[in-house]
Structures are given as C-alpha cells and as structure tokens.
Image (cartoon, rainbow over all chains, first blue to last red):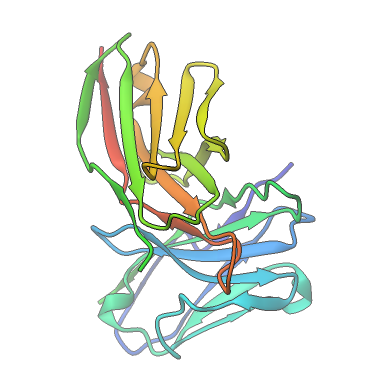
Length: 114
Length: 114
C-alpha cells in the first residue's frame, strides 16, 4: 500500500511569489491534515479535511494560505504571496475514519522563501 | 494555549542501555497520546500510541501514561544505534472545535553510541 506522498520535496522561491504544495493521502483515508514545522519550533497543525470539507482550519496563519481538497482525494496548499516567515517543512498526514485514527505522515515539502 | 513539553536533549545513551524519554502536557482533558520517531530529513513515523493510564509494551518500546500527573514517557530497552533519531511526543485534540489534530512537542534527540 502506497503511503502519503507530497510534491514537491523542496521548493525555493522569492518573497512575493506563489507556491502550491500537493498532498496525496493514503487511498481510502477520509481525514487529511496539514502541519508545518518552522525551524527551531515544534510541528504545528494548520488544518483538517474530512473528505472534501474543511473540518478545522484554526491553525492557518493568515489569509495568504489557501487549502483545497477537490473530490476528497488529493489536497493542495497554496501560499500567495509568500513571505520569509513561511519557510519551513510542510507535512501532510492522513488517517482513516476509525476509532483509533492513527495519522500517517508524508515526507514533507521543504519550503524556503528568500 | 495547549502545550506539550519535551526535553530537547540531546540524550546520549550507550548501546544496549535503556533510553527514557519524557513528555508533559497542559490539557488535562486530553485522551490520546502518541510517540513518533523522526529520522533526519524524513517524515514522523508512529511507534506507540497510548490511551489509558499505565504501561503499554510493544517489543523493545514501553509507553507509560499518568493522566493525574499529565505525563507520558517512552522507554526504549536494549537501545541500538538505529534508534538514534528525534522522538516526538504528540497529544490528540479529541473534543471541541479541533477534533483530530495533533499537538506536538519539539522533540527529544536521542543518540545511541556503539
């Protein structure tokens, strides 16, 4: 069974540019989460999809971040315009809708904004 | 603000010794607790979950939970150099508007010396 995949693995952009990150969850997993780790800090929650619906987006830092999950499959996270403080590692995780709901993490996208 | 605290380390133990990793959390209502292992540049990998007070053993790993003290620990017996990684403690939000997302500590870096 394929795990959670993320694309790209690395992205280097200039301040003010737009970047779109993609996450493909494990097939059949209704829950999809986005997290971010800024250097020196802990991994922090951004938002949670259940199928195509946003269940919780309380962790989104500001309106420069837009997440979508069309059709309840893959998800995209767009940052527009990117700022220096957006640099970090963006992780996606997915889990099935079972009681235990173990979250399986993707390899992350390393974003550097110059 | 709900927090998870870990000693950042590094924690250095000789091969074959017991490594003890500790974590405290602030939200007394938390019900689900996880230990993830993260190798450098890789995604977090779940190694243990625990939901009830007491000990839970899985191979060389034992998770311990004390809800009264708001304390979670992970013991690694017969430590191997391959156990060298950062260990992340995570607490799942199980109620309110943030159902399902994980709150992470900063992680403890473990180094097992041959």
